[in-house]
Length: 250
Length: 250
DNA sequence: TGCCAGGAAGTTGTCAGACAACCGGGCTCC
DNA sequence: GGAGCCCGGTTGTCTGACAACTTCCTGGCA
Image 1: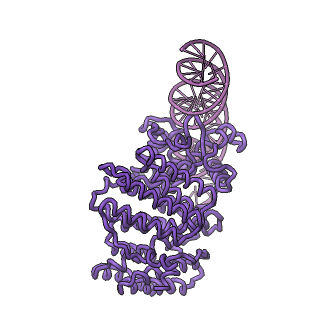
Image 2: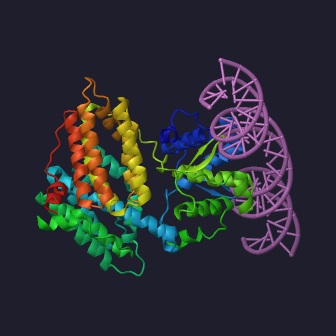
Image 3: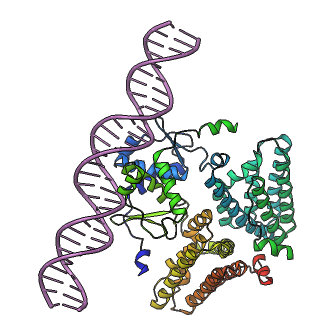
């Protein structure tokens, strides 16, 4: 019976799991800050009361998650930018590009749904906040500086405008992965400033749809924005999503 | 400058990295299929020409990503429904009933988008997995037992069928909050078994839409399922979401 | 025949110790 | 003052061993 295979609960937790959870917690709580060095393996082994092999497996997990980086001969350090995508992306790796595509795909799904809800729920205060970040991006464009942070805040403000705390928390959580993909739009080499300006035009359109309280239009613009952002870094998303085509009917 | 950061990546790759990438590739290419057992550690050590410790660290990474599950004394197996443990740290306390509406709202957004993508991407193996959990819920219904776990797995399997690892991780991430809301459907007191059966009918409809490869229908059924689920616990969601109305046009 | 207890073999989990590869700082020597 | 070398510290890898656990087979029993 297959039910036997599914029975995976109620097993004794492995030591390496416990250690990696504990370390992850320490990092999450800021007890070891980004860039700082973790205690050396031998010390960790002592404090946790396990062997070095267990510590190494736990750290291997954290490395896989991108929360920790190790340098042979130097030590293990809490990652500055967790889950660094851009390195592998610029190396033109296959899997990294695929990963980026998946992120854009998820962004398209989540952000379009959120834009729709925000257009339906936004209050005057929300509009003020969103507009503030829109202007911040305008400034960044004018100065030629990096507006990716304002970009993050812009989308976060839209999420907040849904007045659904879970939505907002979700976007905050995903922010780590999303911001990496957003930063690409602002730091494209070759000084082509037309691309950020194009993105900003999309932002403005999305903003106006939210202000006007047009859910369908907001959804379409949000989806279009993500798809264009993907295209700007050379990724072509399947464009035949229901939400999009149907929105044009409305 | 970005070039400085790139310099960091020109380091000799570690053995455990290479091994985990190689294994990951074998799994991705289907050389070892979901549910199948990996070669035992000693054999892997032999074929890769490294020690068992390296193999163990590589597998620790795959476990962290949820691509592999290990059972002491039995072996290492490619995960049926890849489970990601990455996001375990965001566990608020159990959602108050007031927050339940927000959770259902988020579910409606996420699950409908995922159902749509799954209907477009599902492969035969995905269908098999999903059907398996559908039957598990059938059994639970027949026995009068709790099928909420199979319910979780059902939706997780649909997320996996999108073949977007971030989607899958997102659903796993949200799982804690969602499963709470799903359990309500299975453990309604008053022995009214009509409600779970109604939910199961919705599951079946959704499943068939995914199997048939009808994205719009899958989106509508997923959305409807969540809305009905909410109604079954006394929460009325706003039903005028774009996705829904427009889907009826298609 | 059917089945159940129990052992044997196989597999993962953990430990301990050792050495290689490498980094960083301090020291010497020019 | 600066360049090069050395040395302690740290991670990376190897080896061998035992513990904990699962699976399967086998022999005895009803």
